[in-house]
Amino acid sequence: MLVIVGLGNPGGAYANHRHNIGYRAVEAIHERHRFGPWRQRFRSQVAEGTLAGRKVLLMKPATYMNLSGEAVGEATRFYKVPNADLVAIHDELDLPPGKVRIKAGGGDGGHNGLRSLTAHLGPDYRRVRIGIGHPGHKDRVSGYVLHDFAKADSAWIDPLIDSLATHATMLAEDKDAALASRLHLDVARALGEHAGGKEKPAKDKATRSQAASEETKPAEGSSQPAQRNSEADSGNAPQGPLARGLRRLFGGRSD
Image (cartoon, rainbow, N blue to C red; front, side, top):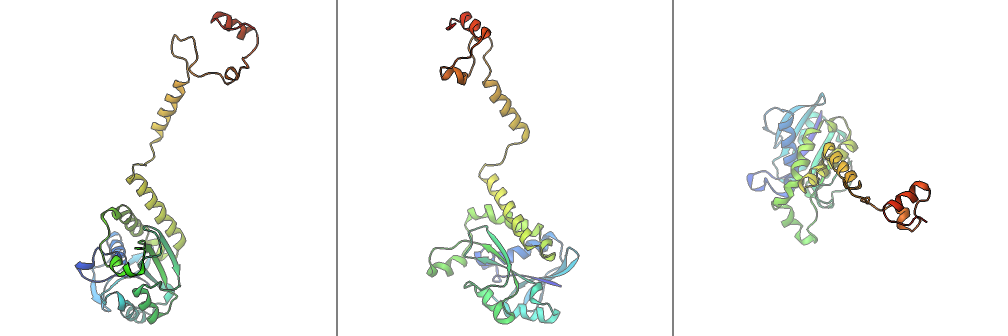
């Protein structure tokens, strides 16, 4: 069994906080992959389902962030799940907004949920670290994480959570590096479209290319080309009978 834990705080007052992005991720996985109903167990909300043919338990600890390890420890001991099959999804101050790192082991970086997990289970579980940025000073961290995301953050949060839910099967297949790359690609594409930088269709490209080509042609009935020949610009006019005849016809030098 794979256990995927979304770290956060229970209750509607916390739902949109930066600290609750782990909750949002497992809720999206639950909906996308049609897991069973949420129920109360292990001092958490849990739901069972499958990803890539593998049995999975989703968890949202209801112990509040600082005691997450107590709830998760109960579940992993009951199912005899090793840390290699435990994935914690959480907010990460030390990554820019929208950046993701997936790794096994490491420190807690001052994150109380990770500190609790490590205290009860050891450090060698897998982590999906979702960057939320840093407020700039450690004294502002608590107010920052326990506050709603800015409205503009939806430009990267929504596509990231959607992509993570869509490709959650990669977690069950231990394709952590591939999943991180996929998430970054989808977020970058969404931000480009949001900023109006969506690439034009190939047909439009061809039209622009044709138009550019037409601009270099002489206008109908004109005796001069639209662009000057590079050799003529440098004073080295083309030589030969044809070139001299054309210059005589149009009043140029015949050399």
